[in-house]
Structure formats: structure tokens, C-alpha cells
Image (cartoon, rainbow, N blue to C red):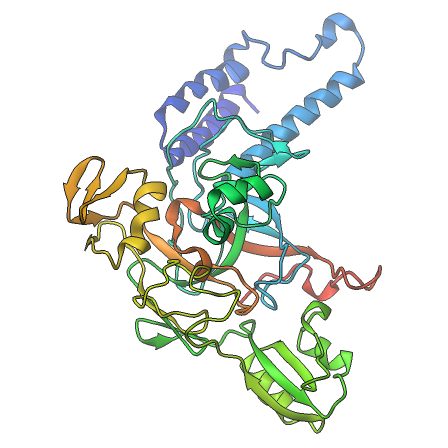
Length: 444
């Protein structure tokens, strides 16, 4: 193929990518492409020897060349198209299961421009226990064009909003929860030290988006209602039930049928039965009809919430009567929308203070009952971003927005595309492999 034709095709693709990226500084890359295909004045692959002069192949340098190309290509794909992710917890079972390996797509909502470009290829935030990125170059949030915005009931992968501060020795614990319950000094003394991560480098979570910006959410007796309409009963959504039996544990095959993992099947002889068995509503009705079942009753938390789901555990972490909420009776709560303005009051400050200070980067101070944002006296606030409310389908085994609040739009990563592999840690090889879940594309 003529070199000018090659140059034109590559340059056209590169130009389309620069327009999508929205950063015209990258147009200088056209000079590199022009030199690679037309002028050939610079030896860009400087690590490769000159085969004509050396007269022989250098296999080592060929491998180096292949590895460098693979790293560049993989980093490009990871940044703008999709990346691998593994489900670490049971908060989305049975929609997504612990041990599912996913490819997460970024084109649906639009990929975020890399905010920390100095990152070790193919890593997110950690490698060998150390941070895998540098903060030498930090760029503001910008999202490239996608096909659509996050919609209600979408399953979404996002950066954990409260993951900006991490307990080094207890990385799976929520630092802010420890501070609320134990105090900052005690937390640092007994659980510290901590490390701080910038926006976009928090750990990834996956949940279902139950409410989008501008919606009003209300959970009643474990059922989600948005704008007065009950959420569809997706097959993976489960609440816990107290299941009373005739005195004998249920057959493991029956528990497997309903997708209940061994970790969730505690049998209490005092009942006798299961105090907290996660079931879909239809499965609960079906189980209640079995001969060896005495009763099946949904567990519903009423106010005041029980330990450990005290008011200091539930967002907005206020013990006043303004928020008589539990995990099963939560709200009503309005989800902030970009451009919307609210009047600031003592009642809604707990809901919006973290948005103002952490997510949108303003200073906030209260003096004598008056509010100052960036040093200016004000009575209202206009939101700069859209926000979302996320919940796990396994409703009583999910730390989600009920426990840490809103998810800002700049933390949205993408959506699950396909399960490419899945294993069950409770089984031995080869039965450990969940063959029926491999290449699964639908997650509703």
C-alpha cells in the first residue's frame, strides 16, 4: 500500500480520536505520524538495532519491541474502551456473583480522560502493595462523549466515593465509619496509618443505580420507590427472611437452587431455622409452600435501627429526629442534579456538606447560624455535578449509598459488558468453575 494512503488512514483515525478526546494539544501527534510514514527522519523505536547494518536478528530487542507495543495498546484500550474487574463481595448476588470476572465497558457513559497519566500500565491504584501512580501531573475531571447517561436501574461500576482515605492495615474497612464510631484520634492510633487517594484512584465498586439526579428515592419496607413508582422486581434482588423449619436444616441442593451461598446459611437451633436467609420475593413464596417449612417472614428494620445499622452508620449520619431512617425504610431523599439550587438549612447541611467540600472542592464554614462558601456569605448552593444513588441487589448484605451517600458523576467508570470467567471458592476444581456464567452478557 502506498505510504501516503497508509498515512492518510492512520492520520484520519488519530484525528477522530483527538476530536473525541477534546484536547487539541494532541494534534502535534500528527507530526510524529507524518514522520513515521513519510519523512522517516527520527528512529522512534530507538531501542531496536539497525538490522541492515548488524546483518542479523536480535531476538531480545524484538521481544522488547513487542512488549512495549503491547503495553501501549493495552493501556490505550484500558483507558478509553474497557478494563477487567473481579467481583470481590456478595453485595450484588445473584445478579453478579463473588468470583465473577468482568470486562467493564467505558463507551456507554463515555470514558473519563485520565486524570493521573503517570500510572504504571495495566494497574488502577496499587501494585505490590504500593501506589502505582504519581501525582506529579493531575488534571481536572473531564468525560468524553458517550452513547448515553447513567439511567435508573443500570448496573454501574464506579470509584468508591469515600475511598479517598484508606486505612493502610485495614484497606477493606471504611475509614470514615471508624472515625464516626471511634473518633479520629482513636482510629489513627488503633487502625492507622492512612493514605489519601485522589479522585479517580479510589477502589472500584459495582452496584445498581436505583435513582438518578433529580429523582426522589423512598425505600418502604425493603422495596425501593422512585418518584412514587416501585422499582421493577429484578430476578437478582433479594431481602433476608426468617425461615422456620420443622427442626431440620434445609437440603443443600435446595439452597443451591435459590443461589444461597454457604456463607449466608446460618442455621439456628433455637428458632429452629434460619434467621437471615437471602431470598427473592418469588422464591420466598415458593419456599413457604414446602412441607418442612413452618413459616417464612421478611426481615424489615424499623426505626430506631438496630446495631450495627445505627443512625451513625446510615447516611447522613445524624442522630436527630430529622432522619428517622433504617436500611429498609429510608428517605424520602432527593438526589442532587447539576444546575439545581437548594436553600441551605440545618436539616439539609448533613446531606450536602460533603458534596460542597469534597466532591465539588469548595470551602464551607458555619458561623452564628450563617453559611460561608469560599468565604462568601450565602443562603443557597447550586450543584456543579449530577449525583446517583447506588444499592446492591443483595439488600441486607450490601454497603451502598444508604451507608455512604451519593455517587458523583465524576466517579462513574462504566458498565459490565460480559462475564469472561467465574469461579466458586466454596467448591473444588474443576466443579469450582461456573461454566454456565462464562460469556454471560445480560445482567438484569
